[in-house]
Image (tube, rainbow, N blue to C red; front, side, top):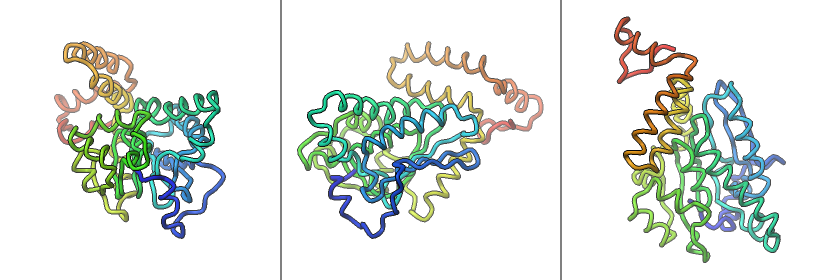
Length: 286
């Protein structure tokens, strides 16, 4: 999803947002947590401080009851140029203990935390998205963008490693994925939406508004059921049909049992008794 981050860091420097000391900015607003990767001068390339801060931020938000939806974006004119080649790779060469700690923390936030996060997550992809940034993008539940994407690793002598290739295989068909993995060519947001990499392609001046609209829809859902539906889908997608049937029936029972809103009973009553609810068109009145 990105170009060589050194190349990107030299592009459009005059448009970059000033960088604070915090590599990750966090804003809470009306039930939405806006996480901003904050290294605009480096196109938000992923550095060790950013990795460790993201682990902390996601852990904090997951248990914050005031937060209903999480949005991940980037400062300036990029979502992320992927891994910072100097700070992430070269600086840890020959330091196996430090490298192992860093690699594990990066895997933790990019897919172990994000992919199974207890709340809905939206990737708001604003601008460049390359290489290692594909994993957190795909780990989010939904994505909207106005961007340039690329799996450019082939251009500088490596493969899309970590779990980038696995993440891409989760959402793109094999022919599209193989083409971009093997050519390193960039592609735009409309192409990304057509291939299923993002949910929709949105003009830049409408991007935040559209993401906010989507977050507001998710905020209206029963949070217990929403969390269970998300985790159930993630796990069932890796199972056989027989395993998925047994697992999903158990997850449904678990959701009904532990739902403090008793959403199923409430919705059934509103539909069958009160005639005030249309399940296929709206959310029940909570």
